[in-house]
Amino acid sequence: MSTTSGIPLLVAQLPDTDALIPYLRQIDANRWYTNFGPLVTQLEQRFAASFAPSAVAPTAITASNGTAGLELALCALELPPGARVLLPALTFVATATSVIRSGYRPLIGDVDTATWLLTPEIARAYASRHRIDAVMPVATFGNPQDVDAWDRFVEETGIPVIIDAAGAFGNQRTGRRCHVVFSLHATKALAAGEGGMVVSHDRDLTTRVRRLSNFGIDLERGSQVFVAGENGKLSEYHAAVAHAALDQWPIVAERRRAVQARYQGILQQHCAMLGMQQRPEQGIYPILVGLLPAGIRARNLQPALLAQGIETRQWYCPTLDHHPAFANFAVGPLPIAHELAERLIGLPFFLDISEEQMQRVARALAELIHADVQHKEYA
Picture: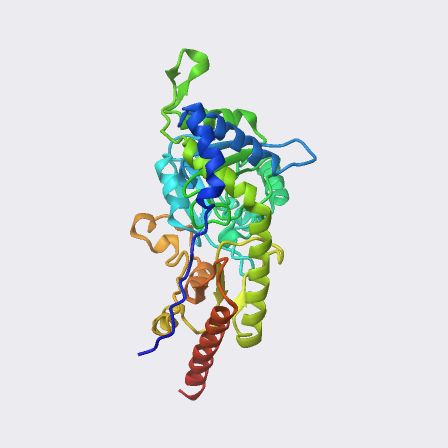
């Protein structure tokens, strides 16, 4: 039996107790634990300022988690019941569930071959053939969406856009016309355990998001509810963790960039046949996903990798249209997303991954790809 230790897929890294203590003491002194407390208010201000240090900052509104943020932003659009929202097939299921739970209908579309994203060009093509009331593109695997292009899309079509940027803090900019939602889940690069943030330059929309996150209570009109909301508020405790994470962000961001660069260099050295998503090189990414050569399926390699103690995952696979809950929402064929779903493989990636672990992953993957290619050549 091998004594080689296993390599986990992910190891979440949140601020430690010492980093939290100053904020926890503020909570003790304030005795304010939820309902838009001072730490939440300060967090929203810090978050918003991070997007525009030398210009007009957007407004940031906290949510209990990223999915709640998507639902709140969708409901704040005030679309008619059953409105159609275009989203990519290659995404986490929360993108689709947030649309349905908001009373709308998802339209599942294809993605770009190189970036693996739903782009404005793809959205325009769908809009020319189908009625689309809103678009929810995703910053897939942390790859940022082009907000300038999406702003032009909004201006030209009048169709609102909410970017699901759950794992893209540090990469995703905010647009003037499109809205952005982030997650602070434990697996993200900026993590608070749980939490979400809706960021927008549209003050009317963010006002509605705030109201909807508090059950829909309109404090300016006699505390009555005119539109039903939800309890989507962020607690002071989660805000404390997020503050500590923001304090550490400059160091964490540089460490993630360094690990990413070294890892990709090792993969290129040992496993040059592994493709990568077209994305900014200096980005800060929470996970690492590679594209296997054509004809090689990720699910066929995973058991052999696991036998060597290497955990992997097929992120966002199957695609949305292959989940029973969303099977009727595809807008025509999805050839690119379906091909990617067969070949994408999520590799171990975390801040403390060692050089030896990266080398093990790269060599094991290279051997399996080479063996698979040879088998097909001689079959």
